[in-house]
Image 1 (cartoon, rainbow, N blue to C red):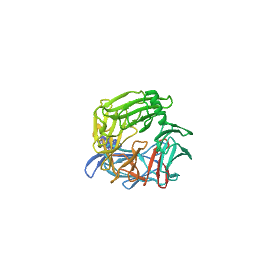
Image 2: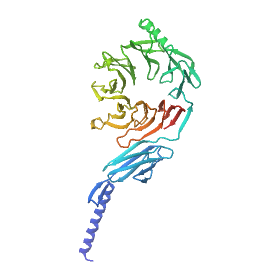
Image 3: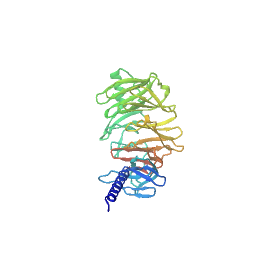
Image 4: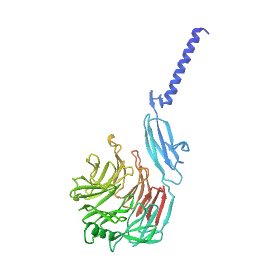
Length: 439
């Protein structure tokens, strides 16, 4: 073999090595050659993480190995050509989950908040009751005019609220008196109405007994309460036997985080429960606006008027923005980044404040088909909601921009429900009893 021939073979082999190395690097970076269309394409992927984790994964009819384990919290399905794929998640005894996933070049589509609901993991706690409340690990029930906890009767015949420490506020409908009962000592109960009127006369020099129209506990303080009468708004301290008037001429009030909000003809007011600071937020509001609900975060305030106008107020600039004009219900997510609301047409939509600048803030979810939202509770991941509608259907609905929106019917004919984040359990009542479902 001549020197020229050897050099030719050497250069040819070097060229092959360079081409092969380039193709390997090219391939490892997710690029593929489409010989049919004589084009270069970049692949994408899908990442899946679920609760429970031991799931079956099917992509376009093909079984995918679940790689969840000690080292991996989820499964990455890579090397996918751009396009739309049918993704199905299944687990024995649980409702299935489906999604049409659009895979884009160089991008991994992430689904890391998949929650499957058990079909048979329900536990019956007791026979049917008229009303129940669950908070802080306590289950208080009402049957006709009797309120009970663990078989012991509680003063009053209407459950009003719980304090954060687990004390229960009740009312006697006949006398209109409100009571505070300590669950650990039901032998004694405090007549809040009597204490309020006594302190109002002694501390504020305002004689004459008046009825309490509404009462709500302070967050994180079992001894303080916000009290509204037909004329004014007060803060009542049962430990120190103190009372303070904080507002007047309001028809309602709302406690959100560590603030109280109310509206009178001067505008929308707030009162800080920690520092005791009072401020006028927006003087464009009047009592005629018929404020239905107020909720707040550190930087924004959400207000629903009786007319259906849903607005949020920037707490720094005090600018008011109309989010929706025909709403009849809203609920702020625990992380204060998502706003779920229902329009008068029964459609449930989520407004994402984090995506606001990108113009992707509206996430349409489901239509209640003639029913309306009765109650909403957010799941702990801020990516799902429990919704009870006016027909009694209780559903678990995901919040996602990709279709289809997964919703699971947990039960029909539900009269009430509550979600307990500490035990990750859903409690609901229907005609057959009170049930617990561990999520």
